[in-house]
Image: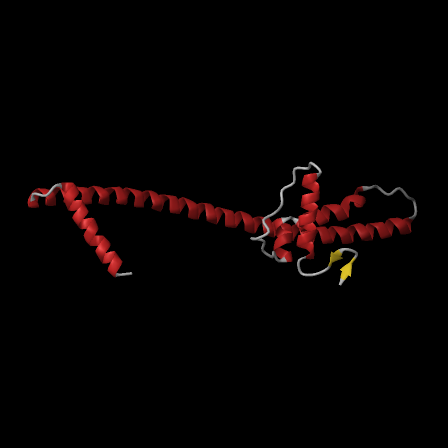
Length: 171
């Protein structure tokens, strides 16, 4: 199917965005084009969480409720009261949902921070152990070179050659 010069199809939106980008940049606007190769589909629920959709929707829907009604008609006031109570209940539920999301996010953040701290501690211990083992190997080379009357560098070359041959055979 086509509309005018634009063909509707699998790539129609990508082409539209490409053409828009070219037009805008040629017109002097500093516009960045997204990465066309690494795009991934995001589920609607995940996108709503990322963009705080529910919070934004709640504020948009409640803008006109902030206006004060001025009337002496009891029926209008009663209906408005019912509407306000209903909206309050809806907002209370949304608040609970948002609070749960925030609490869960805070908990996950704390868990990640703790895991990060533990990994940093483990990394530091491994660095220390690595330095200790390097020192141990270096001392071993010194003693073995003295025992066999080899230069330390020659002994290292022999050992490295032997290790490389073993690694090559194991591939």
